[in-house]
Length: 149
Image (cartoon, rainbow, N blue to C red; front, side, top):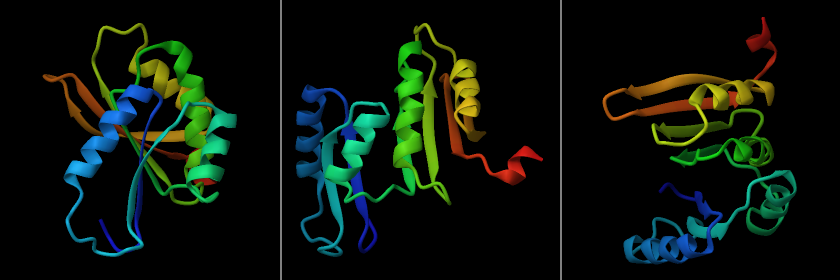
């Protein structure tokens, strides 16, 4: 972690947060590079209102430059709240949302997720693909004027 960086790990599940906090505590360095650097774990329920509240209470109102998510797609009904959350938490100027999608037996396709991203004002690129393992990593950014030309 670089000087002055802030890492916030989230989950919507209360029980998962207990494990996350334990893992952070067990794996944090004995000496910190800077007292300004922090790692925290908080509950985050997806959606515009809950994400706005999250920013106010846990991020001092500051949006994030990078959001990272892995293996989070399990139902179609969570896709719109996901994009509302990304729209709320991610910096519009240079923010990136990196998402790993794993092939699972779930009733939602990656194409549905990608189409929804575009409808919500994002562009995306495939950063890595492992068809044997069934894992795809995408990078999402807010669409700007150059992307529409």
